[in-house]
Image (cartoon, rainbow, N blue to C red; front, side):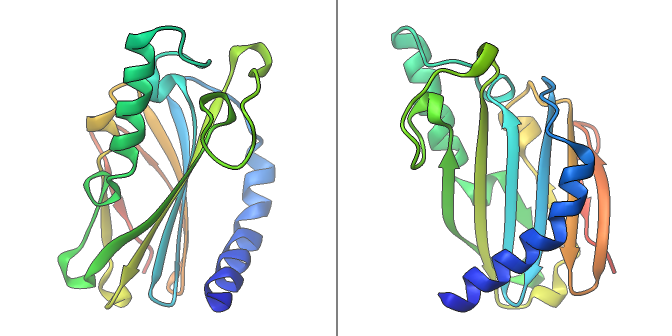
Length: 177
């Protein structure tokens, strides 16, 4: 909807200064996760080196690598398994958008990654009937993809903004407020 696009743009504008400050360093084992709550919409935007998901950062070269990429795509499309919200918030997974030109995902045509450092950007959208009840999100990326070592998060909600770092031992994201 138009209102949803406006909300997403507003959240992006809020997050842009922090992203610019942090730069776009490509570090294996590390990912960025931006979390925004706007109205009844919860949006999680993941930016990660492909190595964290696949163990390589280029187009698959053989059947085993193609299968690994296919499995990764299927796992990422299961947003409700990767991100578990408070039951009281009543969040339902919706759209999942994946963008990685080297894998042929997204709108851009496949192209070689500069210096074999390709990324994947993903956007996960949930609709929450009680967004005020959202206190935490259990992030299952560490269990599903064991190459993640740290996920740097930024959170923007009507209750405030926060930055948090998640690790395999501390994968629960506490919401501000």
